[in-house]
Image (tube, rainbow, N blue to C red; front, side, top):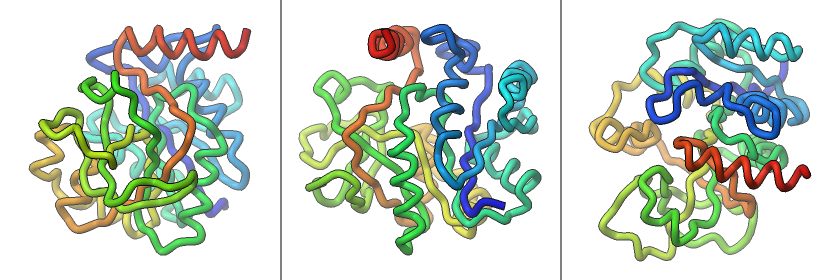
Length: 247
């Protein structure tokens, strides 16, 4: 079995953009774009984690791996853990939790995150890219503040905060957080067994559970800016970007 597993949690019950994973971009469902890009990662197994038969059957029809999870998980990481436990029996040493709403995620960025986890002692890591002026005040965009500014690509720094809105937006160490997490095995087990934290609930950001339990998060810089689709406006923006690049 592979040392690395990429698990993509996804469901149809999004409140801001119903049936989001099945909405089409350039003639293909959004979740298929994400799955296919992740599935190109070498020496890793990619699987969709979903409670919805429509998504499950779509992935299977395309020859991909999918696992029907329980419906009532509180977080995406809980859904990832169910698949890791039941399908992979806790064997892979590195688990990638990749959000299913980033159809233009770049395969090489996932690979670079995996390579970092293989060669470092870091237990939990994620990625970030540059933050535009428009994104700075957009509450749908998650920001990450790091200890020191990035000086080059593929560099990893310590995260000191994650938020959607803040009174302090002047920091030079703010970046656009990308919805991907890399866990070492023992860290994932610990994380999912911790109670949901105060800040996690207040900001609706589960990575804050790690902060409030002294789990350090390292952040890697990438030049690419994958768009997270949360609203109809986001969908139109990513469709314009991807359809123009393909046509």
